Amino acid sequence: MDSRRPPLAPVCPTLPEYVRHWAESTPDRRAFTFVEHPAPHSRGVHRTLTWRRLDVRVRALAARLTDQAGPGDRVALLCPQGTEYVTAFLAALAAGLVAVPLYPPGLPGHADRLAGVLADARPSAVVTTSRCRDEVRDFLGPDGPRIVVADQVPDDAARDWRPVPPDAEATAYLQYTSGSTRAPAGVEISHGNVVANARQALTAYGADTRQVTCVGWLPLYHDMGLVLSVAAPVARGVLSVLMDPAAFLHEPVRWLRLLAAHPNAVSAAPNFAYDYCAASVSEDQKAGLRLDRVTALINGSEPVRPGTADRFHAAFAGQGLAPRTHCPSYGLAEATVFVCAARPGEPLSRFALDRDALAAGKALPARPDDPRAMLLAGCGTPAGQRVRVADPVTRAPLSEGEVGEIWVQGPNVGRGYWNRGAEDVFGAEFADSAAGPGGWGGWLRTGDLGTVLDGQLVVTGRLKDLIIVDGRNHYPQDVEATAQDADPVVRRDRLAAFAVPGGEGERVVIVAEHARTARLAELDVPAVVRAVRGAVSARHGLRLADVVLVPPGTVPRTSSGKVSRALTRARYLEGAYGGQAGPATAGAAG
Image (cartoon, rainbow, N blue to C red):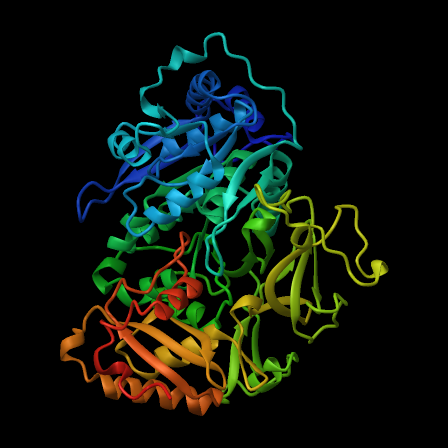
């Protein structure tokens, strides 16, 4: 049976205990459904695990992993998106091992990161599937860790196996950061951290008191994908519907169809996904599509721009999409993922801020139609944790309207970085100890910049990404937004602005992909460069030292899909774009 209302969820110290609870109390309810799209225009093939079936598979795989690794050993997950990934993750936790959520070696553009993470984590075993077994074996080499093929482990492998006694304080998994500003680091997430964050997210998005369906295409190795599509559904006992990220990219309407097919759907996506849907879903595809039952659409980009929500809702208002489903949110791997969120049903909070004042550390209002205004969305309030804004140098707490570093404290904050000292990140204290009381230990310094306005967190950028020229701060994402609006040839959300050393101080560079519909050889590149230069100069008072136009797919991205400014900058300094820029850089420097 699969009744619409799930029973009340107990409070369990670990996710595997939740699985066991639901398997005993609601064995025939659907737990996870993976929708596979085997053909270009496939409507999807659904493969479902009930809670009973999930429990059987988790126990069988946990038993096999116990034979391959000892308590506390790392187990790398090199599975494709699907129910085997969910099973492998939960099995590692049930066996008392430390899961390392990753991806198969065939993921384009991420082989170097995968090799680096495996070298850092040093797993004793790797879990994959029969479909990926050969490429995993070739990638690991003859001296690599032992390989367990999840879909070849029989159900009866767990016949005499007993679960490891739960320990909420033990490390459950290593969540490697995306690497947008530095080399990926493995955050130690305890069992207690992930259970706490799952419950916080459920509360924030109204899923703790109502029946919802979690619908997601975000990769399960990404922090938001793992918590929203695995941890939260397990903690609440609700259905999670998954699809492959590539299936979304090939045909974005597939995501919308899943949202329409499941009542009270809760889902998450970055800025580009909402813009992508608004621009590419055809009128024919919209026909018959009903989105009036969607509960919450989470946007975790940094920062969240109101224009993205406006374009998405304008595109799908005719399909019944409610205007108050968009939930700007903020989070990071070091806090498991979720920190703050706007609540479903609330109007989008919009802030037009004076760009010059913001660069000086003050959030002062500006007219929304002022070309020098920065338009940002509020990311709501925290649930079950504390958030403060602090001066990153003096460690003094700042008042509402002052811009500083975002600090977080709560039961969801990770234990630290694997194999790295990080007391300055995870154990921070305010200069005045009375300014930050709390029973959850030290504060997490996020490295993100923001302010509090009207009681809401407003994220403005990253501390390490700030461009400082002549003593003035410039947010790179703000410069990038200006550049991509300057000419339609510049591909949206596929460009990076950064500073490089110069003879008389920092010089600002933009590396941008051109649109897929254009060919570099046929473009009037100097005209595009002039448009970008002029727009950035007029709006930001910045003289660009270089503008480089490159083919699609050239600007590197992190494992979570964000542009990696750090890696783009490194490649630029190495001269990697010199042969691709063509005339774009002619006369640019100096």
